[in-house]
Image (cartoon, rainbow, N blue to C red; front, top):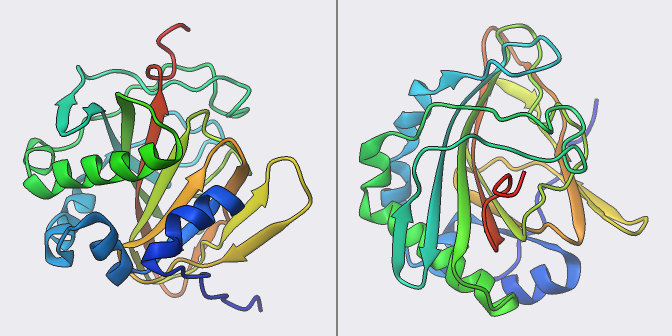
Amino acid sequence: MVATLAPPFTPVDELLPRLHEHGFAVAAPQALATLLGIDAADLHAFDGTWNDLAPDRYLKDGGHYRHRRHSCFVVDGANVVQAPHRAHWQSLDYNALHGGMHRWFEPMQADVVAHPAWTRLLIALAERFSQLKPAHPWYVEAHQFRIDTAEGIGRPTPEGAHRDGVDFVAVFMVGRSGIRGGETRVFEAAGPNGQRFTLIEPWTLLLLDDAHVIHESTPIRPLAGHGHRDTLVLTYRSGGFQGDAA
């Protein structure tokens, strides 16, 4: 039996220094609301949209445990523009399992993208990341994930420990239901040190400096019957979307 380790929560005013120094930082839901200036109730308004994600038909392990939606945005200061719908692309250098493929997923629902809290979320994170790397505009890819246990096991990161090929990553724990596992593991990209913990509370935020750490989440299994794990992943990249020059 593996113990469930609590995340190393960081106070709001120390989040960016910790992200800069250690390559990752974890914000509790209350700290998230303070950091981004977004009411928690606004974030929970999105929760139900995870019940309407389309199957991921690109899984090379033959599984059917992942559902997702994907949309892209350009954030320049206080201006947010949704990019024309595009494929998600990563090089094999960053995703040895699914890299090199143009993967077309269903876009995020229009009412989510149009919600004022969604725009505030994208802008607030861009402002924070710009304090560590002065860049604009930011090219943001948004992924809604549901990993389920209908087949007995679900793999949040079937590619294993990896980087995403971007500048910064924000992983939001949206919810867990009827599962065990799903431990988050963050390691130095060029060193021996790492840390593991489990994101449990809805709208906990994990921030990652993609150049300095690699990360993964362990498989999930059902406690009894069917279970699932929902996350929102936002990647911020300067210079363009991945695949623009591919």
